[in-house]
Length: 101
Image 1 (cartoon, helix red, strand yellow):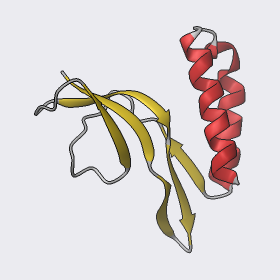
Image 2 (cartoon, one colour; image 1 turned 120 degrees about the horizontal axis):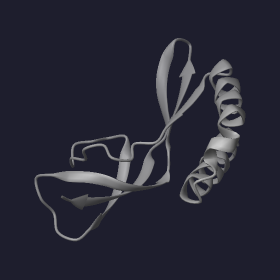
Image 3 (cartoon, helix red, strand yellow; image 1 turned 180 degrees about the vertical axis):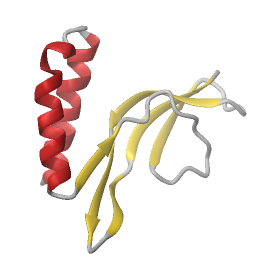
């Protein structure tokens, strides 16, 4: 259930960034993220990061041709981790689109 809430918060934040109005809500998103972290949950937006086939925290769709310089160009769902008994557990893989640059 918490993953669904995190995905919705992530989607809202992403849409606001596209409309260039996310700054108005930055303080609110910081407080929401702090609340998640206080309960052991973190999420990460890997946009712009390098992607290789050995990366285990993302499921990727490839736009264009495969190459040696793959980069994440769009994030559908963020990477979500949960800390349980002191261990960082991958709760959800990121769903991403990658492209050879």
